[in-house]
Image (cartoon, rainbow, N blue to C red; front, side, top):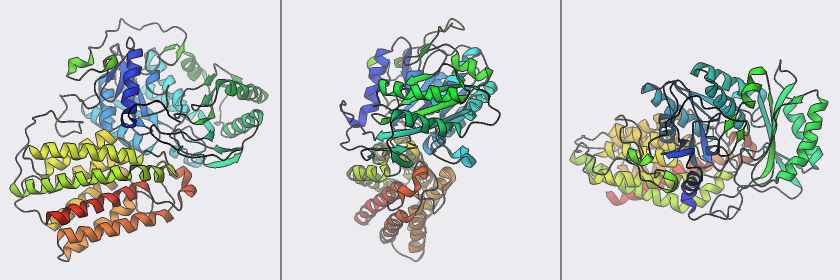
Length: 602
């Protein structure tokens, strides 16, 4: 279990504060994560890695010369928000551009891509490489759908070394993609991990069994088998990875036998003894292998084997010196006399131990119209029309009810999500909805209309929740607000239905999921269609919303019979059958909570 914590809701922030205090001479905190204490030298490409926390030493532990320039740190097993990725990328970027790299998970893909787009718009040439090394998560014919696990470490290291050598951005991106193409991983789990504050693991493995094809976000294996002796497990891992040896690769490899958090180093060395012999039997020479914990999953018991099929360039970059808090190799010679960054407090952020700015603070010089974490207190908003202000007050009450509903359902939503995912959905919905309510209440108190209130709520939801659901809910609320506007003389049920339809379009455009994929779309489409039909037939908004919420609830329940075709649950599609989708379920709970508010507002 995760036994040592103060408040489960602030576990990541508390961890980062301690980490930054210990390593204050080499790293510093910025909103959303950490960067090197020294500024990126002129002409050097910045490499920023990241994802959810719970994987130490990935990701903040690899920030340093020869490795990453920064790390974006999300909540436990949750993609950082686009704002977090933007913030860290902006802080790390120098004059030669920026490479983001993260695992190939839906939330990471959406949020890092949005951050990339924003940075490109600001003139910072930014690229993204998503790691896809996990051979168990999709067949070879769908390699682009695979997720990133311990192979993250390899791609990050190669990209960081290339940037340190002076590669330009095109070449750093090229060699990072090349490293990804040459990296394969297979993992097994002996026991699940437990979230801070949780009393049960996210999944259980029967005694004498092991899950095969684990994920690093607490996902169970895609299959199950008898737990063999160490030598037999080594054979299973080696044969599985070598079955996907890239065409044209040579006889030199590097290898990582990675512990997931609980498996002892002594056990890993016992397994490595046979792994090394088997690789030698296959005529493979192992260069600079690593055995230990490099990409963990809280306290998961398990291990994974990663093989990288080397060429001269990849071998040189893998073996290049690095000096980071958690990984050191050789001696790094500084390229230039690097300047130390200004203290975070100089930018107006509150200091915490180790100089970490408080997670609620944000840059004050952001372009207008972009997502941010919090507006400064006292920000002036265009006054809304009387009708729009009244609508805004109802929206605030609705968001308050949604936040309360999510707080009450957090444990159950996490349980549903953990069946085939990472178990973080409940916590993410609580963080997002509570942040949205707080932002909406503040903006409404300033006399703003529905647009300003809902856009502020959407931006806060996306920034605080992170993950797939965070960015999607943020987009929905922003689109609803934009459609309603601030200056309507009257807001009718039809106007609200049209705004909800705009929210659905934003969801579909950003998330790319379709009905039948087993996502919140499967509940949102029936809700939107029913709302449009009922208000079109002359029903009052409250009654129309109630009936539509019931349709949403029914559709959410029906997702239990679907097999997921996108997202983290896709590799565990069969396990998911019989359990409703967590995102669809939470949407239905939100719709029902809003129905109660609308009935009292009549």
